[in-house]
Length: 433
Image (cartoon, rainbow, N blue to C red; front, side, top):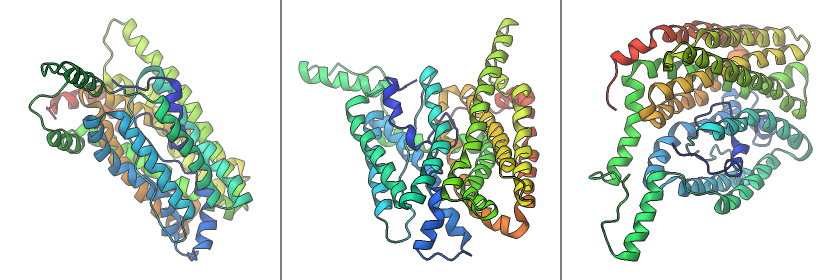
């Protein structure tokens, strides 16, 4: 399993991480506090709620389709060239946003990141801190210097990271490393017998590329376990982004917050994320140790233990209900923030539990199963928020979040049932992808 060679390497990329997910990039809602200013500058009517939310949610579409193209390319050319190209493109598209004088909704595509051990744990701090630090900083910037400076600051960070990456990052994909060494030996000795032992024989680059694109989709639709888990996480992710794209409007219109205050409102969900991370780390380790102490071999389904999934799945709807009704009745602003913190706790626990479960259950194709998860999750993360402001306008904050909470509650038994019957279903539908 490839990983970053050192801590400094992956710290270059934390600044544009988003909602918590240890397996792939997820974009930040850092620009959310600047949306009202953008709508005014580009003469978007107040009634156009779709455009208001699309400004943020469009970012997520790149995360739906990007991995399908970039993951195969990384298998052909290695991780390092993909990192450099994507960092450069990120900077270029950010520059375009900063200079934008027309309504444009483009930014860039992510690159997949697979890591393990301590690197994965530390890397997770990026997605956790991103949704907290980003909107807070953006709120101050928007109020003091205007929305364009949000992109200028991101561009400065991206530019420094892009340049630094050329000096710090090293190739970590074993087939690419061995092939480079073999090619060097062939050139120095003229002996064509020097070949990488990891080189896939009788497989053309086109075949590698196409298989890597098709496999995640096959796994998504032909393996019930993956289908159920991906649908579950995708709906939760869509709800999360619906909230992220509407926080600014809710806190500015209901509580009269400034751009700074609206940005600070994201701290609540980030705090819930941190508490959830500590919870899942502590409880998950205890569960695995208990299984090992009993003399049994841990199963992937042990990741879905009810001690983890029951509290997490129930705090999600509870947090949504608290957020919606306290905001509807204009209770002190701390109350809806506590609600989003409770929801953030349940969200991070379920994202980490489900992602770890899928990787453990389908280790041979871990990259493909996480890509399948990313595609569906990112699609709903981009599209569901488009209905957010319209939903609140139609039935109000209270009933709107009650509806979202009911969806989360109806889905709650999915991980519970799979913790009991998952192994049986997984083995019955086992196939080669």
